[in-house]
Length: 276
Ligand SMILES: Nc1ncnc2c1ncn2[C@@H]1O[C@H](COP(=O)(O)OP(=O)(O)OP(=O)(O)O)[C@@H](O)[C@H]1O
Ligand SMILES: [Mg+2]
Image 1 (cartoon, rainbow, N blue to C red):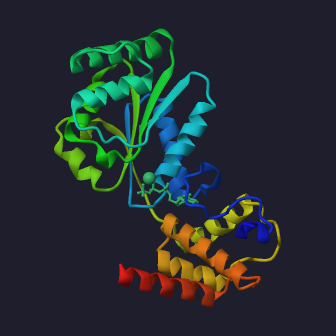
Image 2 (cartoon, rainbow, N blue to C red):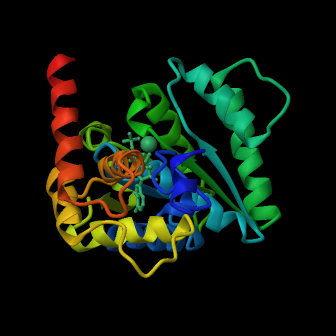
Image 3 (tube, protein in one colour):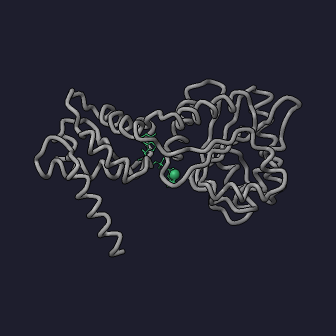
């Protein structure tokens, strides 16, 4: 039986998958999502979300797609891993993402086809077309150049493509080096780690989402203080630590995660790090 069933939960509370259902609306995550929605609706062109490793970027991108997909008139597309070497590979892939056929011979032909597609969907049919790119730090300079040209497609009033670029912090200096790119960014937002209270709330939120409805706290106050101390509010680290803590809890046949359980896991992880 999985450990979470022993705790009478109906879902795994601390899985590392980027499931928007478990996205706790911290100030940073909530603001980022709201601002993205507004930028898309106002057809502002390009939005940039940056964050350190494990701050919730992929989860946020999925939450955005989920919100947007509920709206009629908004067509959203997502690219998870944009590592394409050549311009040709990248435009071919973009065309596929947009569902454009047939195949073309040159980069220029593809770009023109994409422009026609965007014009038809956004102007003739009055939709909003959104392209969300996660892991954008993997975009090569030539792919970034293609995106820059897509942002040139516009009417007198608005940009045809709503581009949401999400990546690790290292992306920023790269964008700044490309002329005419940085000044096209209409929204720039940095996802911050959680503070100590948000860390506690995130743990409670994920337990509740997993079906925990007992009045008793599963983690003591001191245990969550330690969790914050060792994760500095980075959501992936919190998730991993809480997952291990609940496994230990079940293995030890105890009822509450106390400080000693967290200490034990932290020590164990430290030893593993030393070996690696
Ligand atoms: N606000 C949040 N509330 C609850 N869980 C979160 C939150 N943000 C992130 N997480 C959890 O943290 C883990 C890492 O999130 P995610 O994969 O979205 O991070 P990332 O920024 O995309 O990481 P990477 O830089 O490695 O791509 C996931 O398990 C996710 O569910
Ligand atoms: Mg990610």
